[in-house]
Image: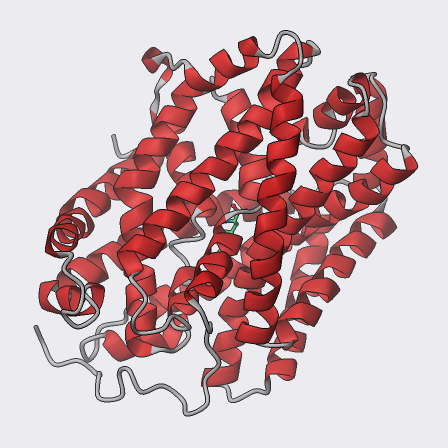
Length: 461
Ligand code: PFF
């Protein structure tokens, strides 16, 4: 391999904050993966794309592409112990512009935060509205009108979005161990408990089995190029990969953490949450005869109507939106950390300054997305509102392209020997088989799959 700029690899700045325990690393990483992707995107995309068939493709993408990219990112981040841009720059051979992949990651984090903070804002709003009972109605038309009222009111839209940005900024100023780790370690178990309660409630409804069949019995004839692209985009979005988030978190990992094991646990736990969310939602939707293919409004229109139809529905609705709010908070913390880490380390800003700059950037850039259902509703780019555009660009372009570059970089530039050293924690773990399998996946299988899907999207074949 050619000479790399690695002289300072592994040293990092003197007093760099990091995760303090194995559990903390797992909780924070899982906190990033689990989010509105599980509770909002996964059910609505599964609902509109044929249920189990979509789930099947999504599972395949998660295992064949998602896991290798996640392991790569965490490994690269831990090797350099710096933000994503610096990590890739330091590991790049001279005159190779891999740092640009880190730059694209920061751009992608901003794009996601612009619409994600808005949806999170609606979730927080629905906790309050659930408590007051104002959105709980068994009539989907009335539920739809209530949701429409929220998103088409510019003051409410911006207010909730900025409120969420302020909350996440507040937590993240406390740093990696005292902010992110502390909050996610406490929130993740609560999230699991709440999800199990809702799942049991949904499964015990009469007629629930139809929902389970929809979720688990695939019809492989429904697989198409679009379905695969969407499933892959979701796999990237779900695991927070392809844009430097896991690289940034990896940089806070301790040297003795077993990376393949942690990444696999995160992937499995994240899948479990998606399944639980599906089990919580689909049986209830079928049991009360609602439309399963409602799309993104499933969470805010169909779900409140479903809850309003069941005994103690108000309580369960509030629990449901509370768990969605918890999930979104962990994910937003990790998204914020990408630019914050960069600004602190590369631009020597104080943590507070970096958080403030990021928050202001998102508040300003995110406003057009938040107003996509009111003031900027008529402004479209490539036929999409700002909200849809930011969502589409991040999931279907930036993340897969970033993931492809990360696979190529890991497999072909970082190379086999360093992979072996890093993933075996300097030969202290006996996981040779896993390392070999990972190397083949990251070098050949994952990049070829992502490239095929992207070429198909660009209509090359
Ligand atoms: N994985 C998060 C979710 O499923 O909601 C979303 C996300 C977080 C995407 C962090 C990207 C990211 F960097």
